[in-house]
Image 1 (cartoon, rainbow, N blue to C red):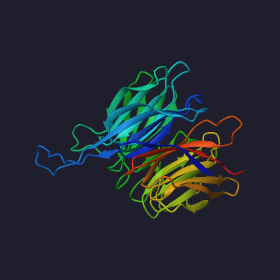
Image 2: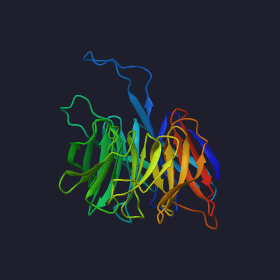
Image 3: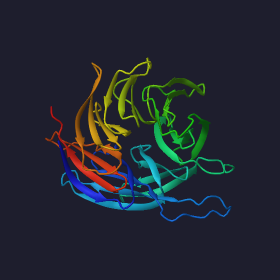
Image 4: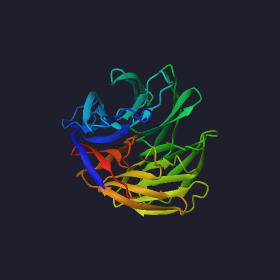
Length: 354
């Protein structure tokens, strides 16, 4: 089912991969890394020594016809925890890459199509200057809102942050609020309702937030460990998928959250869920301590079934994404995956049995 096309050493520990989705003719994707520096740094105020975190943003080009892989760029940054491509404002403008990092910052890079490189445009700190220590920015999601892009960022102090990014490159913090008792590992907009934002935390809680009233819409306590990833399904309204350290992939109907529609044990904490752009019922799951899994959703039943597992990685499986294209006259799909301590990036071909 899986054929590895490329295996690349990212040098720093790799934790996120995102394909550029809005241009099906190019095979451009980004990879984010997170590296703990070995040497401790002594703070001037006499507090406990700290180990700084550093990272890189890599930009790659995968040849659709030749299956070649080229590293276009490597940018030194703070440690990256999550990233998402933002769409171009218009047909004659460029897309952007939004990253969130260990310094509690949102950084936005413009992808210069002609030069095939990223150029940093914006750096925005989530924390107020009065705070003693900035939280880690853990996850980012976005949605288009009239002329702006609205961004949601969750952080290591259990907070959620709502921001707007304008076509002029301005970042405006709309509001921030404390949501979870421990790390807010993940956040995601509802793809069918402009009023709902979901979040999951290390307190084992899944929450829905009403953005009109600034109130919590509901709280779900079905998970037996921290809630680590969320997916509002792009094809099926009211379907919400969740991943957790408890290793269960859960499918909910958001109109009735008292019980799940289906559950599937993936034998490893689930860090990321990615629907295929052309086949959204195919879900790529990064199962931290085991492998990368391809799951099929049967929306009619509804049910979840495991189609196959990719076991090329030997460390924590964090980053995964589908390529947005398919070769002509070829049913195979392409995916990129990356893992942590072995700092490994893989490009692979996936054959799905009909």
